[in-house]
Length: 172
Image 1 (cartoon, rainbow, N blue to C red):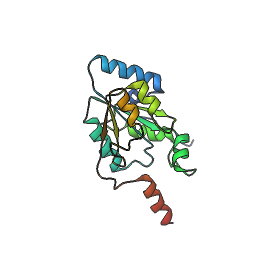
Image 2: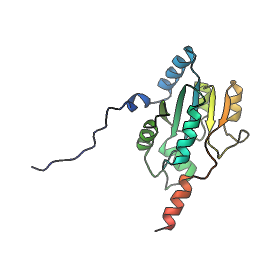
Image 3: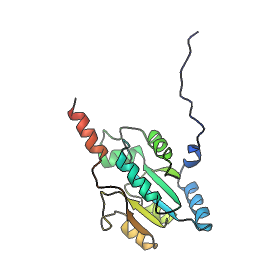
Image 4: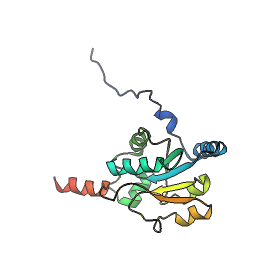
């Protein structure tokens, strides 16, 4: 008889971080706000997780009590970055993000921007990585409309999943 190998997920608490959509995230945010917690929100594709992502997420988390990360759906990554992206499916990208100690909640969103998500959740802070400035954040007007703050987090933009992919293709 041949033994089979299969991956069995550990019970390490990341399941509680992964929420199936916007409604449960909204409920969580409302509960956090009721007890005076400061909610930080960020988003991205996180396709090929690298140290720049980690640094940005860690710094974002330091700005408040609870970090929510919205991960772009596979469809929205393809629309933004081309047909050969994402390199990893959304199920794996959200699992990686949820596995980070600095992240408290993760969910998938399917849009070009997170304006609608921000209007629904109204986090106190919307954090974006260093590829933006306070003036160029796409959701700037939305965040300011409800009295939220914008923060630019992470180290200088020396890391890029897209650049890494181009380098790897060139090495073939």
